[in-house]
Length: 398
Picture (cartoon, rainbow, N blue to C red):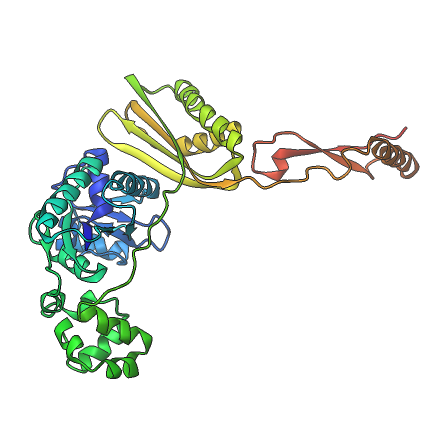
């Protein structure tokens, strides 16, 4: 049996819980690019007509009272990792997916007796609530698809269990929108007068294959309650995370930078010992008025260098508008990869040849005069601008 966990309005609920935002005010998570689009909404915003994929301007017209915030991928990724780790007691085979608007997970319960399924479902729901502070709906059935339909249509926090062998009857009245259809295929089925999963299951399998190819075979099987697809169990993405809690709110940037130094340094030591570098850095600041500033940046060059990571944090602080003192700081280093070998200098062990080349260069400078030959030297390794990283100086003639 498969247990499905469904968390609607996943990102919005996490943001409201994380920053103690009032749940009575609609919340919309939007893309901060010039062509801004809605990424996710809370329940209140969805009830006004705002939905993912809609332009922000249109969403404001539907929901003028909404609060718009940027997405926080680091928070969502960390939460899913916590969930995956915490549910490992129930099964070794767990699949979790999310599209910001909602999150869905499946747990392989094996051949659990029918009489134990309700207790297992209650335990899973309670564990999820303890781990991330959100209440999911639970569906249990003999496959991923019927379990997902059960979870997404459950009307209460009690698990909705589909007895073995009754999947087709359970699915029959639901709309074909529950199937993984593309827009064109859904329109074709509507033109054929097919509206429910029961009507899809009643069609000849050969007709579905003729009309829609291999996808039609899968849709016919799912509509009939037959889903033998195995769960795809994902490994937990490794990351490094450190948190600092202040006794009193601080607003001094120097103190904050020193705290960031103390947080990041042990993480870089561990990464260097493992031969790894990070490609993403996340910084979350909790301020005294119960709001949170959180941002994740992708580093241009993977690194485990303390100075470069501190500089990235400093740039985030430069763009953050903090109206009150900070009470908590959390730094996350994610997207860890193994460091690749790099040849820094071609002639590093050929000092005599290097000296001869430099001697020849100085003689050429004497022959052709000033302002003809120049050399470069590293000035600031941490800056990203080439004109600031290197300086050019003239080769002096002998």
